[in-house]
Image (cartoon, rainbow, N blue to C red; front, top):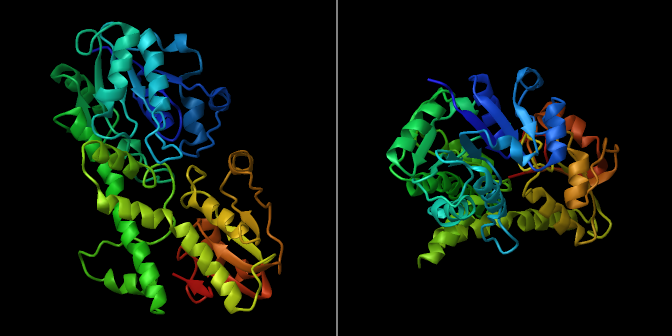
Length: 422
């Protein structure tokens, strides 16, 4: 059977690995992104996300392009664009809308469009399909068909990559489902799970990250409780995790493009159908408030040590949303920095994993090339990069003033090397 021509719309943390996998399975792949800088980088074998090794980029035969006409020949279009939230924490479908409009104008009879972007249950049918119908002047299942196969890529995780994570698939009709099963079955070694409907697949994805959000919120609330009781939360978790069925989630800042975003999609849809999701809202409130909580903790420690808040010098280690990953989307460390600055503290940031230009452009924050020794009242490890754990507490403490304080919010170094841990 001749393999289909595939276009992948959106070449970020999800789209690029998808494109590479299908290319290596000998499909003809067009990788499309409106960001011309991204296209130029990929054509120069550069991946700023760090998800794909350079040799795989060098050896690929993908047509990376920003030209809409280049995706016309594809039979299957896979949409992997971002689905963020707006300033009011409502779903922002602009990328889905834009991708659907582009595809609606170029798809032909028999084409299949597969959405991988995280959405609320019903969004593919309510938002995407009407746009495809309007611009293509065809009807769903009577011209083109649609599938939904939620992405499960975990940035900076070499073990759980696209090929090694079981793939959930769904479609608008049984024949299309068979095509999509075969399609992903060619590249996903972990196997395929066929959901009975697109809505089920959408719901499965959005609760995966919502479940993690709830569990981390519990840990963060425990931090607040145990801190008032002068109990180290990490010590408690180490003891509790000796029980075989204890879920070993850890407290901390919850940012990024998944856990800190996806629950709001389910919250939005829940409220649309008349359900107030009290537990989801509570978890989001707790996790979104941890930047302020940690800022207050840092300022209280400064006051306790008779170091004035105004013009105190604070060094934050790590600004990305997770360890060993350059992704800065929805970084709550940025919120922590801004909160501290609002109290007139002088705050520097050091993160050798992050792209300094991106951080300056996105947040207006300058990243240090190298921290100055004996310069800071407080040094805070906010992200558990391996480079920080490899440096160790002794080296990191050299950036503190003689009476400075070393805080570790992520259990990065030995607890005996830090003055404060969770």
